Length: 506
Image (cartoon, rainbow, N blue to C red):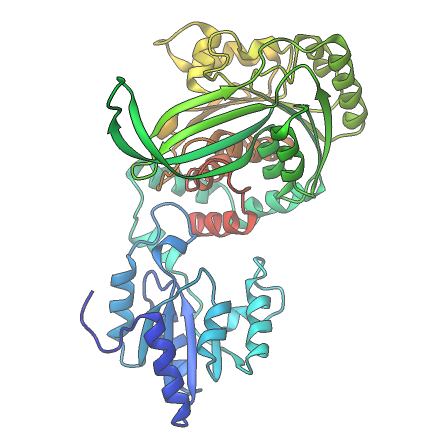
């Protein structure tokens, strides 16, 4: 970054703005990402200069730019440098928060300037604009909307300065040619009309961050120092939370033990999800503890606490009763089957006999690997698997993937079958055709939970009749959002997803 007197830290900017206002200078604040400066930005900043004596710009740091993978195209230092080079800009600083709300409270400018496209109430579907209006009124700041040449950094980058790897860029070009952005976003809007039942294993994910000390002095063991720990609602609970985030009416059916972990999961359940839990007195709630090196984020050890014994007939019948009651009239039943006895053999016939459309994910993990495959279920409308899971099903580690998918889809009667392939993206099969999609993840913090997010959103899109390429787009975008955070710390953010899709398809 250049050494410019215009570029300040945020605390220094607060002090400087206070001095300017004390001297009677009228200060205008502009705020944004400014990923690729264009003539629309210039007219916006010139409009701000006509309203005040001093134009101050705060810029969103890289970690809070939510415009999709590989964004921003230009890092914070370059964006600050470009703005500082403009004569119309007097001061520029990195913002200290993801949005401008606290920025307004700290700076207390005379006028907050936005582009004319934000003037209409409801123009910003994220609701951020209305919150900023409220804060501006709170601090006595006038909001002004200036006419400019409406343009888009994302559109210019996508059309003339592609930042994506060639396969991703080529795939996105094809999507833009086949689908309008408005139609893609409409699928997200329509999800709120769905009544969804989720059934599967409730899991308490426990992350323990440690500092590696070295080899223990008396044993051939690794010694670590615990730094902090964190617990998340995982498994089917996480899937239910992702689905509820899109406004669906959600009921969750699962099994909990009579223990502390069960109580934690009950209390962690979102108010938007109705829990229909069956208590199992003879078994512990599934708990997965992961010991993580805090520096590298590498997982050193996983410790599972779970009971592999099938539940009693009474527990299985209670689960069946809850499922029949919840599924009556449901638009979709989502089966998140992790193989930890929340879906015992006795329940499979009930699931297969449901009249509601059925989406199934059967996971192979360290607690069931080799013993738990998708054809334990008799039918499904939508099937979602990772590549290693279909290879376990077919007992084929090296063969071509497409014939496997065709065979398993036919066996289950699935109209749509999606297989994820890690960094190679995903492959969808529908109506006799295959549709490849690249991975959209850029920053990977933790892969755990990515499949749950992909499955949740893809199942909703498939139920609404989205074409396979859009199901893959939405699922990959959800998975990309999920890998950028630790485990199932938070549910999918629909507004952030909308912004990512808008940036990808602009």
